[in-house]
Amino acid sequence: MDPLDLIADFIGGNAVALFLAAFILIGILLGVRIVPQSQKHVVERFGRLRSVLGPGINFIVPYLDRVAHRISILERQLPNAEQDAITTDNVLVKVETSVFYRIIEPEKTVYRIRDVDGAIATTVAGIVRSEIGKLELDEVQSNRTQLIGLIRENVRAMVEDWGIEVTRAEILDVNLDEATRAAMLQQLNAERARRAQVTEAEGRKRAVELAADADLYAAEQTAKARRISADAEAYATHVVAQAINENGLEAAQYQIALKQVEALIKVGDGDGRQTILLPAHALDAFADAFGMLKGRGA
Image (tube, rainbow, N blue to C red; front, side, top):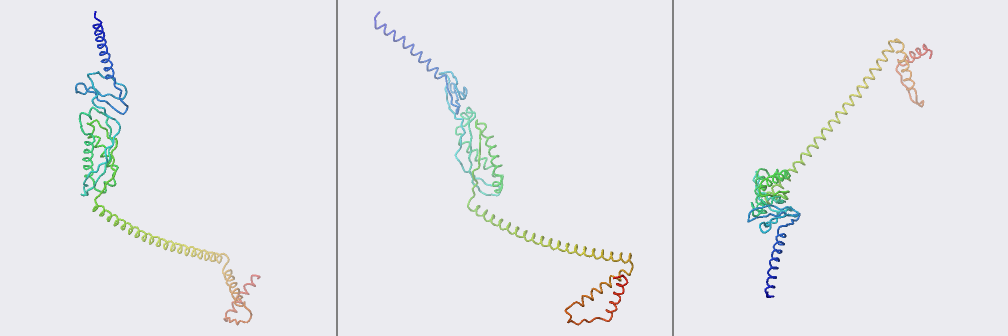
């Protein structure tokens, strides 16, 4: 056999072997898919959904299946957006919102919605306008936490068919136009002035009440003192009456005479240069007093 033919046959046989080896090697490489922890892969077969590959090592049919979409399942944040809304009391407000979401079912996201961010932003804007349209301005300001909860739940219900989970929805700020802001400031100042006047009036009222309570307390204490004094005098009178009843009229006359003598002695006290005028019956009082004292052995 011609050496050239042998060489040609050898090369041809090796080429087939090399082709088969390359085909098998490429098939193995195509059939093994390693998915990162932060992703999910959507696999199609002839243009139709075949499966969704989760994180880790996965196997597909080479040359028939292909990874059509690589979807990140990390949490995402929409750009902050402002929506105009009108409250029930006809006040125009600008609401700044922020939304966080993540894709949990990529097969729904890639086949049911094209622009995920735009769709969520439009949904949030419509829900914000709808919910704020049910409230007055004061309620929007005071019930912000409740309003955020309503918006979050409504957005979750709307985007559920897209395989998306809304993790957070926040109202960052509620802005007013200049005319409304000036009117609210004027109203706030008037309310502060009213509260100050009410506080001052309540203070004066309380002062009057305290003064009246003090006067009443003083009157009650004076009456109480007078009652105690009257009780003491009544008790003294009772004691005197009891003594007269027990010892007779003579004991009372003795005490009176003794007081008369003590009074005359005090009148006579002095430096000796004064003139003392006594009524005529004062001597009789001396005589009676000394007589009674003598009678008692004094």
